[in-house]
Length: 622
Image (cartoon, rainbow, N blue to C red; front, side, top):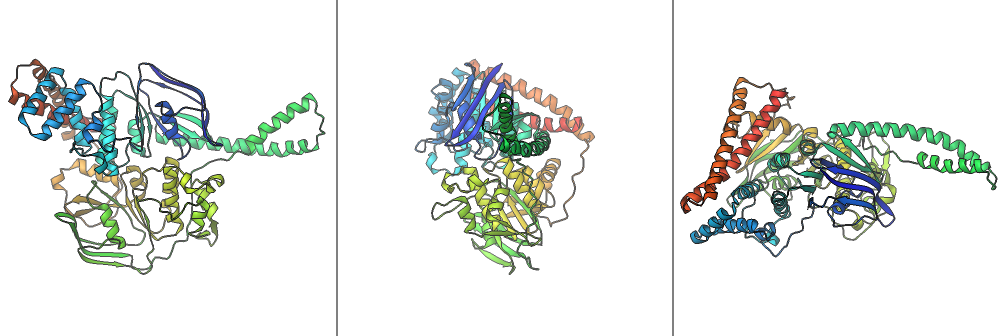
């Protein structure tokens, strides 16, 4: 089924075009990722498709039977209403029944629960209820009577995501799901679950994300907006990078030829008399086309920057027997570690495990309950926090950077001006004279990051650096950091980013325990999946990073794979039986409660076993 057609869409703000004359088609089952720099119109295009904005010109057609659902970066929630009121906003009887059942269960009132169970049974709402429970559980949403205004930014984002995921399963035959950075504020376990969820759902998807593993797991097509044009790539992220490199190479060759021709034609233009023949008029028109090609700028996001970093002495940072708690919650319990030159450490763990507190203690912003921290005399911290830019007054981008320093020193003794450094991080000369207040959210994050790097720190701390950054900026940042000679500490849920840059991990396991794992994130996850959690030691000394070994499937895993197929089939049969019992109207209150509880357990088991079956099938096929 044909979902969407767009022809010649254009959108500008002021004199700056976001995109112009772009055309595309979306068919049922397409799963598309959009890649572009911040400020080039990704979010605007999504809002146009969702009917929240209108294009300046062009035609947009959406099939009348298609329901468009938009998940935005900044969720539109009613602050004074509860979590429940925001999620169950439909007036449909099934949704209202589920809402009442959830609230009744939280209240513990037996009469209310009984009435809710009867209503659920009448509407045959149990399958949908088990879906709701799964979404709430995976996104860690529990207190439905809490008002939205009391939640953190991350909690609000998860509530909005839950509302969207519930909405796409609610009686929509044809759904176009549009998602703008859905993985922000999700921990890794949530991101991996969301990958699996969207992979199973029969939805058509248009997605903006900076998470490349998520992109590859969910999408099969990539659209790139660059230079106000749209480029379509059928394939994964690596395929897109290859095709983009080819395009840049071909464009560079075309520009080189056009420049040579332009010089000759420019000389002819200057010599020509004012009176033109038809032939010379044609040549003149052609000259302007050549000029346009010759003056094109080739954008390449590869950055090689040999920086002259502040000197690192023999002592970096020593943390000795550090303890920290908030009430009964332990964050650090006797943490002991000595950082070495050039060390690259990733920090992972569930939200609330104490990662940000650890960073603050390391820099002296928070004090430990006990223990000692010795920081080397030569250490200059650079802290890229989630707090973002803080300005006393509005100023232009170039002024903001020049207030830090006029030049950036390089290892060969030369320097880069503030303007040149800005260009390396994708701020073109026009954008450099924009007021900071006029930048998009992602552009402000990019400027904040750039301002930290411009100070030339030798111990760089990045707290969720990939949130709100576009993929071209991330490519620039990764290339920069891969050559960075100082110490690097990264807190991130971006698995691709971590895999590329860190040598070992501090795993925050909760209750004050921090495990030092010798490898990157993918190696850590492979180890976690290959052994029971109970057998993992609570703490380990750092060891040299090991290269991942290609894993062969064992006889035991083959047997597990065969058994899983039968277990999944049995669970589906049991689920159908329970659904029939629930809708039969013969079970009493106690039986209904047990059956509804069991169907929730079955749904969770199916999710877990189907995920494991997929992992084993990949090993068998590989």
